[in-house]
Image (cartoon, rainbow, N blue to C red; front, side):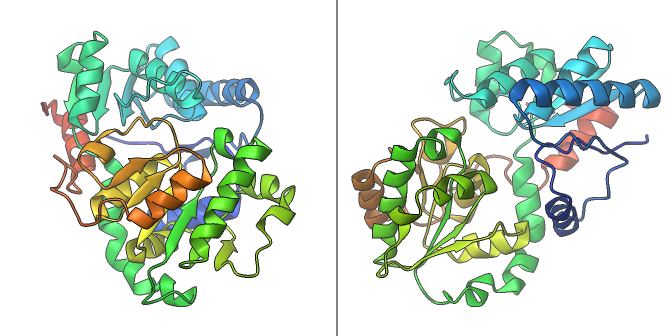
Length: 335
Protein backbone atom coordinates (compact mmCIF):
# COMPACT_ATOMS: atom_id res chain seq x y z
CA UNK A 1 0.00 0.00 0.00
CA UNK A 2 1.39 3.38 -0.97
CA UNK A 3 0.63 6.67 0.74
CA UNK A 4 0.76 10.35 -0.06
CA UNK A 5 1.33 13.12 2.48
CA UNK A 6 -0.50 16.35 1.67
CA UNK A 7 0.30 19.51 3.61
CA UNK A 8 -2.45 22.09 3.18
CA UNK A 9 -0.29 25.02 4.21
CA UNK A 10 -2.99 26.42 6.47
CA UNK A 11 -1.32 29.40 8.23
CA UNK A 12 1.71 28.41 6.16
CA UNK A 13 5.14 29.33 7.53
CA UNK A 14 7.81 27.38 5.60
CA UNK A 15 10.43 27.68 8.33
CA UNK A 16 8.11 26.57 11.14
CA UNK A 17 6.66 23.76 9.03
CA UNK A 18 10.12 22.44 8.15
CA UNK A 19 11.13 22.55 11.83
CA UNK A 20 7.98 20.71 12.86
CA UNK A 21 8.48 17.97 10.26
CA UNK A 22 12.13 17.60 11.28
CA UNK A 23 11.40 17.42 15.01
CA UNK A 24 8.76 14.72 14.55
CA UNK A 25 10.67 12.78 11.91
CA UNK A 26 7.90 13.29 9.34
CA UNK A 27 8.79 12.91 5.68
CA UNK A 28 8.51 15.98 3.50
CA UNK A 29 5.01 16.26 2.00
CA UNK A 30 4.48 14.92 -1.49
CA UNK A 31 2.10 17.81 -2.18
CA UNK A 32 1.98 21.22 -0.49
CA UNK A 33 -1.18 23.17 -1.23
CA UNK A 34 0.33 26.37 0.25
CA UNK A 35 -3.06 27.85 1.03
CA UNK A 36 -1.87 30.28 3.70
CA UNK A 37 -4.08 32.43 5.90
CA UNK A 38 -7.44 33.94 5.02
CA UNK A 39 -11.03 34.09 6.15
CA UNK A 40 -12.76 30.85 7.04
CA UNK A 41 -14.56 30.73 3.70
CA UNK A 42 -11.51 31.72 1.65
CA UNK A 43 -9.28 29.19 3.33
CA UNK A 44 -11.75 26.31 3.19
CA UNK A 45 -12.59 26.99 -0.47
CA UNK A 46 -8.93 27.20 -1.48
CA UNK A 47 -8.10 23.92 0.27
CA UNK A 48 -11.05 22.18 -1.37
CA UNK A 49 -10.17 23.43 -4.82
CA UNK A 50 -6.50 22.45 -4.60
CA UNK A 51 -7.06 19.17 -2.76
CA UNK A 52 -9.64 18.03 -5.31
CA UNK A 53 -6.97 18.22 -8.00
CA UNK A 54 -4.64 16.05 -5.88
CA UNK A 55 -7.39 13.46 -5.36
CA UNK A 56 -8.28 13.34 -9.04
CA UNK A 57 -4.64 12.87 -9.97
CA UNK A 58 -3.69 10.28 -7.33
CA UNK A 59 -7.02 8.41 -6.97
CA UNK A 60 -6.59 7.41 -3.30
CA UNK A 61 -8.56 4.59 -1.68
CA UNK A 62 -8.72 6.47 1.63
CA UNK A 63 -8.18 10.03 2.81
CA UNK A 64 -6.99 10.19 6.41
CA UNK A 65 -7.60 13.54 8.13
CA UNK A 66 -6.64 14.69 11.60
CA UNK A 67 -8.07 17.06 14.18
CA UNK A 68 -10.55 19.89 13.78
CA UNK A 69 -9.03 22.68 11.70
CA UNK A 70 -10.40 24.05 8.43
CA UNK A 71 -8.20 21.74 6.36
CA UNK A 72 -9.68 18.73 8.19
CA UNK A 73 -13.27 19.40 7.15
CA UNK A 74 -12.27 20.72 3.71
CA UNK A 75 -10.35 17.56 2.80
CA UNK A 76 -13.13 15.35 4.19
CA UNK A 77 -15.74 17.17 2.11
CA UNK A 78 -13.73 16.79 -1.08
CA UNK A 79 -13.10 13.09 -0.49
CA UNK A 80 -16.71 12.32 0.42
CA UNK A 81 -18.05 14.10 -2.67
CA UNK A 82 -15.62 12.15 -4.86
CA UNK A 83 -16.71 8.85 -3.30
CA UNK A 84 -13.40 8.31 -1.50
CA UNK A 85 -13.47 6.77 1.98
CA UNK A 86 -12.56 9.09 4.85
CA UNK A 87 -10.83 8.24 8.11
CA UNK A 88 -10.89 10.79 10.95
CA UNK A 89 -8.14 10.66 13.55
CA UNK A 90 -9.32 12.32 16.80
CA UNK A 91 -12.98 11.58 16.14
CA UNK A 92 -15.73 12.10 18.68
CA UNK A 93 -14.37 15.05 20.61
CA UNK A 94 -17.12 17.52 21.55
CA UNK A 95 -17.15 20.81 23.45
CA UNK A 96 -20.86 21.40 22.63
CA UNK A 97 -19.96 25.04 22.05
CA UNK A 98 -21.23 25.98 18.59
CA UNK A 99 -19.52 29.38 18.74
CA UNK A 100 -16.24 27.52 18.17
CA UNK A 101 -15.45 26.93 14.46
CA UNK A 102 -13.57 23.80 15.53
CA UNK A 103 -16.75 22.24 16.92
CA UNK A 104 -18.48 22.62 13.56
CA UNK A 105 -15.44 21.13 11.83
CA UNK A 106 -15.40 18.16 14.22
CA UNK A 107 -19.08 17.31 13.85
CA UNK A 108 -19.15 17.68 10.05
CA UNK A 109 -15.98 15.64 9.60
CA UNK A 110 -17.32 12.83 11.77
CA UNK A 111 -20.55 12.72 9.76
CA UNK A 112 -18.55 12.35 6.57
CA UNK A 113 -16.15 9.70 7.85
CA UNK A 114 -16.22 5.96 7.22
CA UNK A 115 -13.59 5.17 9.87
CA UNK A 116 -13.71 7.11 13.13
CA UNK A 117 -10.60 6.82 15.28
CA UNK A 118 -11.52 7.97 18.79
CA UNK A 119 -8.87 8.95 21.36
CA UNK A 120 -10.93 8.11 24.48
CA UNK A 121 -14.10 6.43 25.73
CA UNK A 122 -16.02 9.69 25.96
CA UNK A 123 -15.39 10.24 22.25
CA UNK A 124 -16.85 6.82 21.48
CA UNK A 125 -19.91 7.63 23.62
CA UNK A 126 -20.43 10.92 21.78
CA UNK A 127 -20.38 9.22 18.39
CA UNK A 128 -22.76 6.47 19.46
CA UNK A 129 -25.16 9.07 20.88
CA UNK A 130 -25.12 10.83 17.51
CA UNK A 131 -26.13 7.64 15.71
CA UNK A 132 -22.79 6.63 14.22
CA UNK A 133 -22.78 2.83 13.70
CA UNK A 134 -20.55 1.12 16.25
CA UNK A 135 -18.68 -0.86 13.59
CA UNK A 136 -17.25 2.37 12.15
CA UNK A 137 -15.84 3.53 15.51
CA UNK A 138 -12.45 2.42 16.83
CA UNK A 139 -11.00 3.33 20.23
CA UNK A 140 -7.37 3.62 19.18
CA UNK A 141 -5.99 6.10 21.72
CA UNK A 142 -4.39 9.51 21.37
CA UNK A 143 -2.04 10.00 18.43
CA UNK A 144 -0.55 13.11 20.05
CA UNK A 145 0.69 10.98 22.92
CA UNK A 146 2.49 8.78 20.37
CA UNK A 147 4.46 11.84 19.29
CA UNK A 148 5.13 12.88 22.87
CA UNK A 149 6.42 9.46 23.96
CA UNK A 150 8.61 9.17 20.88
CA UNK A 151 10.08 12.65 21.37
CA UNK A 152 10.37 12.93 25.14
CA UNK A 153 13.95 11.70 25.59
CA UNK A 154 15.25 13.96 22.83
CA UNK A 155 13.29 16.90 24.22
CA UNK A 156 14.77 16.40 27.68
CA UNK A 157 18.29 16.37 26.20
CA UNK A 158 17.66 19.89 24.87
CA UNK A 159 17.51 21.19 28.47
CA UNK A 160 15.34 24.11 27.37
CA UNK A 161 14.71 25.32 30.95
CA UNK A 162 18.45 25.95 31.32
CA UNK A 163 18.57 27.72 27.96
CA UNK A 164 15.85 30.10 29.14
CA UNK A 165 17.37 30.61 32.58
CA UNK A 166 14.73 28.82 34.66
CA UNK A 167 16.36 25.45 35.40
CA UNK A 168 15.63 24.30 38.93
CA UNK A 169 12.87 26.88 39.38
CA UNK A 170 9.10 26.46 39.66
CA UNK A 171 8.29 28.22 36.42
CA UNK A 172 5.09 28.57 34.37
CA UNK A 173 4.62 28.02 30.61
CA UNK A 174 1.85 29.98 28.86
CA UNK A 175 0.23 29.72 25.42
CA UNK A 176 -2.81 31.74 24.34
CA UNK A 177 -4.20 32.09 20.84
CA UNK A 178 -7.97 31.50 20.73
CA UNK A 179 -10.00 34.46 19.41
CA UNK A 180 -12.19 34.57 22.52
CA UNK A 181 -9.08 35.26 24.60
CA UNK A 182 -6.94 37.45 22.37
CA UNK A 183 -9.28 39.38 20.04
CA UNK A 184 -11.13 41.37 22.70
CA UNK A 185 -8.74 44.01 24.11
CA UNK A 186 -10.48 44.01 27.49
CA UNK A 187 -10.19 40.22 27.87
CA UNK A 188 -6.58 40.20 26.70
CA UNK A 189 -5.66 43.02 29.07
CA UNK A 190 -7.21 41.07 31.94
CA UNK A 191 -5.25 37.95 30.99
CA UNK A 192 -2.00 39.87 30.75
CA UNK A 193 -2.65 41.45 34.15
CA UNK A 194 -3.23 37.99 35.62
CA UNK A 195 -0.04 36.61 34.07
CA UNK A 196 1.86 39.63 35.32
CA UNK A 197 0.69 38.91 38.85
CA UNK A 198 1.64 35.24 38.56
CA UNK A 199 5.03 36.32 37.21
CA UNK A 200 5.74 38.34 40.35
CA UNK A 201 5.83 35.05 42.24
CA UNK A 202 7.59 32.78 39.74
CA UNK A 203 9.01 32.99 36.22
CA UNK A 204 6.52 32.89 33.36
CA UNK A 205 7.61 31.85 29.85
CA UNK A 206 5.17 32.88 27.15
CA UNK A 207 5.93 31.71 23.57
CA UNK A 208 3.68 34.10 21.70
CA UNK A 209 1.55 32.96 18.78
CA UNK A 210 1.71 35.49 15.90
CA UNK A 211 -2.02 36.16 16.28
CA UNK A 212 -1.55 36.94 19.95
CA UNK A 213 1.56 39.05 19.40
CA UNK A 214 -0.34 41.38 17.10
CA UNK A 215 -2.99 41.90 19.74
CA UNK A 216 -0.47 42.40 22.54
CA UNK A 217 1.34 45.06 20.54
CA UNK A 218 -1.74 47.26 20.83
CA UNK A 219 -1.70 46.81 24.61
CA UNK A 220 2.02 47.30 25.20
CA UNK A 221 1.47 49.68 28.10
CA UNK A 222 -0.59 47.04 29.87
CA UNK A 223 2.34 44.60 30.08
CA UNK A 224 5.09 46.93 31.23
CA UNK A 225 5.84 45.79 34.75
CA UNK A 226 9.42 46.04 36.05
CA UNK A 227 8.62 43.59 38.85
CA UNK A 228 7.30 40.93 36.50
CA UNK A 229 9.41 37.89 35.60
CA UNK A 230 7.46 37.24 32.39
CA UNK A 231 9.44 36.40 29.28
CA UNK A 232 7.74 36.88 25.91
CA UNK A 233 9.32 34.43 23.48
CA UNK A 234 9.06 33.91 19.74
CA UNK A 235 7.23 30.73 18.68
CA UNK A 236 9.43 27.76 19.49
CA UNK A 237 9.78 24.31 17.87
CA UNK A 238 7.91 21.29 19.18
CA UNK A 239 10.86 19.62 20.91
CA UNK A 240 11.91 22.78 22.71
CA UNK A 241 8.33 23.41 23.80
CA UNK A 242 8.01 19.85 25.06
CA UNK A 243 11.24 20.30 27.02
CA UNK A 244 9.87 23.46 28.65
CA UNK A 245 6.51 21.86 29.47
CA UNK A 246 8.19 18.76 30.90
CA UNK A 247 10.05 20.88 33.44
CA UNK A 248 7.24 23.31 34.28
CA UNK A 249 5.40 23.49 37.58
CA UNK A 250 2.28 24.78 35.80
CA UNK A 251 0.95 25.37 32.28
CA UNK A 252 -1.62 28.07 31.47
CA UNK A 253 -3.14 27.62 28.02
CA UNK A 254 -6.16 27.58 25.75
CA UNK A 255 -4.68 24.85 23.55
CA UNK A 256 -6.32 21.45 23.21
CA UNK A 257 -3.04 19.64 22.66
CA UNK A 258 -1.41 20.96 25.81
CA UNK A 259 -4.37 19.78 27.88
CA UNK A 260 -3.56 16.26 26.70
CA UNK A 261 0.21 16.50 26.98
CA UNK A 262 0.13 17.87 30.52
CA UNK A 263 -2.35 15.16 31.52
CA UNK A 264 0.04 12.47 30.30
CA UNK A 265 3.05 14.15 31.95
CA UNK A 266 1.25 14.88 35.21
CA UNK A 267 1.84 18.64 34.94
CA UNK A 268 -0.88 20.87 36.47
CA UNK A 269 -2.71 22.75 33.72
CA UNK A 270 -5.04 25.75 33.77
CA UNK A 271 -7.14 26.00 30.61
CA UNK A 272 -8.56 29.48 30.07
CA UNK A 273 -11.81 28.40 28.45
CA UNK A 274 -15.42 27.87 29.55
CA UNK A 275 -15.46 24.36 28.10
CA UNK A 276 -13.26 21.72 26.54
CA UNK A 277 -13.68 19.05 23.90
CA UNK A 278 -11.26 17.00 26.00
CA UNK A 279 -13.15 16.64 29.32
CA UNK A 280 -11.19 13.49 30.14
CA UNK A 281 -8.21 15.76 30.88
CA UNK A 282 -10.28 17.27 33.71
CA UNK A 283 -11.98 14.13 35.02
CA UNK A 284 -8.95 11.85 34.79
CA UNK A 285 -6.06 14.24 34.21
CA UNK A 286 -4.47 17.33 35.73
CA UNK A 287 -6.44 19.97 33.85
CA UNK A 288 -8.82 22.62 35.21
CA UNK A 289 -11.05 25.04 33.30
CA UNK A 290 -10.74 28.62 34.55
CA UNK A 291 -12.52 31.85 33.60
CA UNK A 292 -10.45 34.55 31.82
CA UNK A 293 -10.29 36.82 34.88
CA UNK A 294 -7.36 37.88 37.01
CA UNK A 295 -8.79 36.58 40.32
CA UNK A 296 -9.67 33.16 38.87
CA UNK A 297 -6.33 32.62 37.14
CA UNK A 298 -4.20 33.87 40.04
CA UNK A 299 -6.14 31.74 42.54
CA UNK A 300 -5.84 28.63 40.37
CA UNK A 301 -2.11 29.25 39.85
CA UNK A 302 -1.58 29.53 43.59
CA UNK A 303 -3.60 26.40 44.23
CA UNK A 304 -1.34 24.57 41.81
CA UNK A 305 -4.34 22.61 40.50
CA UNK A 306 -3.79 18.88 41.11
CA UNK A 307 -0.18 17.85 40.86
CA UNK A 308 1.10 14.37 40.25
CA UNK A 309 0.55 11.95 37.42
CA UNK A 310 -2.85 10.27 37.50
CA UNK A 311 -3.74 6.76 36.43
CA UNK A 312 -2.84 6.42 32.73
CA UNK A 313 -5.76 7.00 30.38
CA UNK A 314 -6.80 3.94 28.40
CA UNK A 315 -4.71 3.42 25.24
CA UNK A 316 -2.69 6.62 25.67
CA UNK A 317 0.36 4.40 25.39
CA UNK A 318 2.23 5.41 22.24
CA UNK A 319 0.67 2.71 20.04
CA UNK A 320 -2.24 4.65 18.53
CA UNK A 321 -0.69 4.89 15.06
CA UNK A 322 -0.07 1.15 15.08
CA UNK A 323 -3.75 0.48 15.84
CA UNK A 324 -4.89 2.83 13.06
CA UNK A 325 -2.67 1.01 10.56
CA UNK A 326 -4.05 -2.35 11.69
CA UNK A 327 -7.61 -1.13 11.17
CA UNK A 328 -6.86 0.22 7.69
CA UNK A 329 -4.70 -2.65 6.41
CA UNK A 330 -6.03 -5.68 8.29
CA UNK A 331 -9.60 -4.72 9.13
CA UNK A 332 -9.04 -5.17 12.86
CA UNK A 333 -11.49 -3.74 15.41
CA UNK A 334 -10.66 -1.82 18.56
CA UNK A 335 -13.69 -1.53 20.85
